[in-house]
Length: 352
Image (cartoon, rainbow, N blue to C red; front, side, top):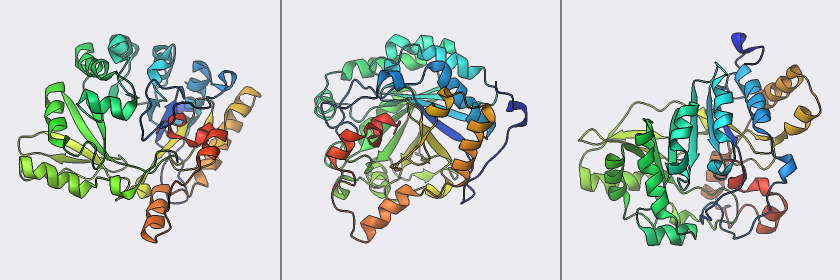
């Protein structure tokens, strides 16, 4: 626990949004090549020597919790590729300001590590699963790992976890005929399914508005099967709007493309090599690794984070929606050559 933890400071940005949630990318590597995230076969990886140690990640997290963060989500790339991940969880559990430690994974290695993660003190797990059909999974990810993902999902409740979430990117013309099947699967797997509107993140994923399955359309499809669907209370700063089916089943939709939630966003991201992004869509971040390794004092690094957040004006999803509304959203926002020059610009490097 850092020295200010007992007197935690709360900071807010220019719109009054607090700094509450941190997504910590532990690696940029991934064992899938999903078309909406890592569409290229080969990538420029972060230099090994630049990647933060687990101890450095825990120390940086401590500075964020001193300023108000109380929720940490471990991401990647694929976080289970990072050796010693359970050790990082144990370090984070020592920080009394953290109320929730979650993990987002593609599930391939999950069955191997679920019990270890539970024993280390991880609170919650989210598994990304975009289709229940093995052939579609291979089409989307270019890997034949569907069975291992399903085994990973099954291992979560066995290990003792509750609150499992399954995240599905809803893509028109790809998996829009599986929405009901996914809800039913969630019931069997003791998981809450969350549908995510296809987002124009990165630049190489060939996103188009025609592929977006909107929240309104998702609700229409599901209501044709289940009847009246009731919205649950306001989500606050959470990204998902939750809904209730007549049988009591809950599910969520993250409508960040058609209904951006920038006004309540309290999240920021630290990459595996210590770049801090205040918005998922930001093209530039703040280097925290350099001062950390140069011996900057705790106060100096906290001041860097404090001033960065207090000056935050990011409303990236709203800005992109405005471009589309005004007819200015044409093609990829970041060219492939630029993405190869700076690996941080693709989502696999900053935790999505």
